[in-house]
Amino acid sequence: MWQKFRRFAYRLCEDTDSGLGRYFNLLMMGLILISISVWLLESHKGISESYGAALKIVEDTAIICFMAEYILRMIAYRGPVWRYMLQPLAVVDILAIVPFFVTAGNDMVILRVLRLFRIFRLIKLVRYSEAVHRLVVVFQMNGSVLAAFLFVIVVILFLSAALMQSLEPQRFVQLTDALWWSIVTLTTVGYGDLVPESLPGKLVAGVLMVFGIGIIALPTGVLGASMTKLMLEDRSRKVKECTRCGEQEHLTVARFCHKCGERLPE
Image 1 (spheres, rainbow, N blue to C red):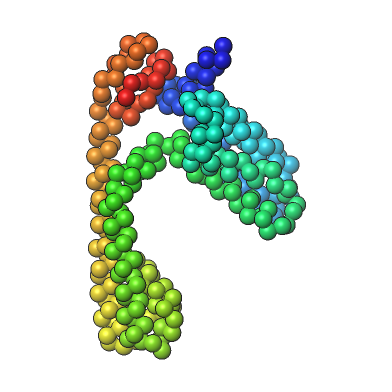
Image 2: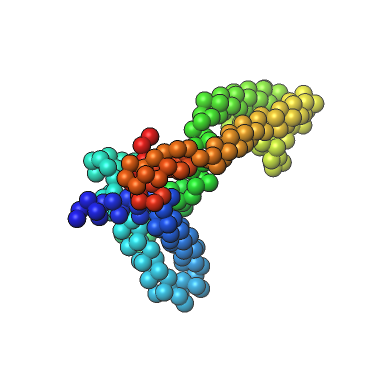
């Protein structure tokens, strides 16, 4: 009986190939969006005073569902419970539930911070969105390349900030001011709160702007190419025969049989 329930939990929470798993994912995504909407509505004084009781019922219902989901995933996990609780998405699930236990009328700083943990409910969408999952995989595939780009950008920012402070010490008194100017210039935002006045300073700013366009566009191209490659691979079919029902055609990213819910061989 227990094994059947665990298999059901697997199909419900993990098997996105089956209809049951897809409907469960859609339900949880809807609850997350509703919960975030309630949070926004509660921040409006007039709406909160008029519909506070109804919003509280919706919030409590969503929290109960989140807690039930957490328990089901814990049951479905094949391994020690403590190992599941330390997984990043499991930690996000817990942090998304914590604000429910915070007293609404208490103004202690720590409790106000805990209420901000509601934002983790948006991060929960990562679990249910295939597109977001692909994006995470793309970042993992290009981790070393992105790290190299980040290193180059940091070096350029500090070099340009130090150079600008040496060229215009009266305008950029502190290095942090020059670093702020470098960031808004490299990203071509240009707030205009700090601008160079000397000719050498303007030349440095011009070079930094032109360089910023290229250095920001390069990672975008790399990620776009990887995303296209991954999507083409996902559309292809790979023979993974289910040891239980014999079904052979599954997506390359499938982990469970879309017919019977059995875990597929790697």
